Image (cartoon, rainbow, N blue to C red; front, side, top):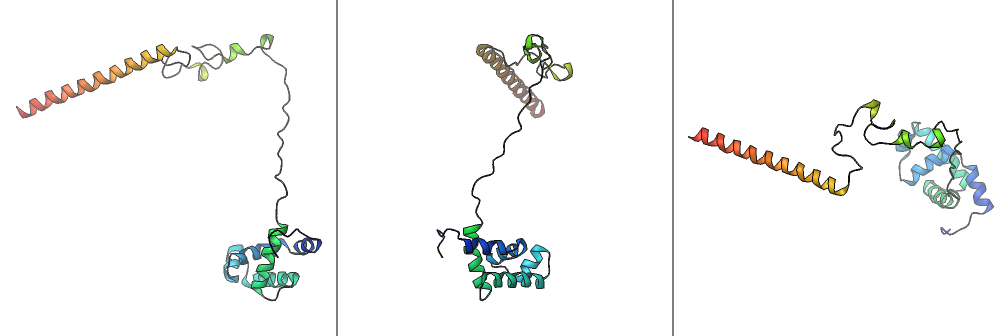
Length: 172
């Protein structure tokens, strides 16, 4: 009765004799739930749960509820295994004729300054305008960042100057 036991014909036959509803109840028995708890979880009566467990006990040849759970757990470890992962194959793409001149979509996919269909949503310019574009050279990007940093520093210094002037007015 170890976990390395290979499924035999008898095990497979017993597993096949258990119904899905019996297995659902037995799975919850393995979690040490009472018939009342199982009934609530499955939305059935306690009497129905007891009937399903009793039928499974007879099928498995067990003497009581605990023996049924032990036999079911052994059987489940042997028979309820996925032999392989399901394979999902993608749908084969179909080729469509090209409407592009010479089959070259470069003009339509050009994202620089208002060229092509992808320039902006419905012909609008991006919110940053042409200041921050992906095709700037690294030195141009560094210059833009330096200018933006200087603007922020001047704004902070100006704010501090105004705060100091207001403090003098209030105190004096």
